[in-house]
Image (tube, rainbow, N blue to C red):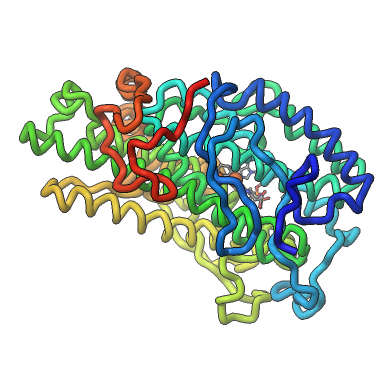
Length: 475
Ligand code: BYC
Ligand code: FE
Ligand code: FE
């Protein structure tokens, strides 16, 4: 069944009404979620009517319905892609066996940990973005921010459903803890590094949704292969929403670049100070933001050699990106993969068992995908006749996780000493002065069809509405 039952308190396509215990657990968690949303969700947004899309079915055709709603009344619910009763596990030691509808006892702790880690990122991103609505560059952008926020809220629901349905009392405790950790909190932070960083301005927001939501795409794709069928089905549906988040990031950065290029051509200058004086973000600052978001995001894939990753794969909990399209044996024993390591102060490649390198395999898939979009940003510069190009930094630049964490690297991949790092840091990563400048541009522009001076309007509106449509009605 793919139609969503909206007559219940918690919209769902999982026959929630037939499972009283679960329904009670979720209905107990729901008010805590709403309190969390009110406390740390989008600031000052309670009375806005926002033109949001809501899922009405999980069918590829027509799953979404658009209309003005208050975010607090968004129908957060539980949607799984349709199941296939004959689905088989297609990788790891259980390859060829039937997919699991329940959690096997021996994999319980690992599965719980994966689901908790995934679930933790979703509310974290809402917390990180909570002040951005106050400085939106347009009503169109404000609506996109809010759409992403409600969908990340729903992704949290998706993981809480799995915890409460399949992990009993531990699962309920973990579900509560997901609302207790807070992004950036000194005593009770979110689990993964990037989700404790600040998203202080809209350039950071666009970089985050381009790079960090793309970690979501790759991790969710790997989980969509899982032998634990409910996890596979829920992450497949989450992926349909992720595409829009990455679109907001890619088109957002692209529009910033387009506007900067336009001003550079009007003023016939590439001088950062003159571009800033004209109210636009210079390409150097954009590059430094890119360096930061790229490096903290590739850390999210974990250590380059990880026995956890080997266990997750061999036990069927987490596959590779597009596992089904790969032509190897899907067991990977005895195969190797190249990872980087530091030897005598230099980077060298070495072959390690593939199973232990699966975090690195996924990171490399991510890298290919993100480089492609940076190429599309460069097309904007090329078309404008501007010779500067944006580029992703070296994989070892600014790393905090794994074997590369111990060294200092230039963005081009040259090992540098502490002295050079300290001297060049502000050329390579956003400085406090960069943040202060970008912050100085962030004003609130909210008349329909108007845009802040540092960003171009989009080519098209949302759901074929005009760009100057009233995407948010302020209550
Ligand atoms: N920061 O053996 P390792 C999304 C820890 S984004 C801090 O490599 P493993 C979204 C690690 O936990 C998708 N700690 O670990 C995007 C471990 O700790 P313990 C999120 C880190 O388990 C935007 C230790 O280091 N989903 O959806 O192989 C907006 C050893 O590491 C970090 C998932 O991540 C870090 N960056 O790999 C909204 C999928 N990296 O046990 C949403 C689920 C590693 O020693 N998670 N550590 O204390 C996983 O699959 C794995 O947990 C990881 C880590 C790939 C993250
Ligand atoms: Fe998400
Ligand atoms: Fe997302």
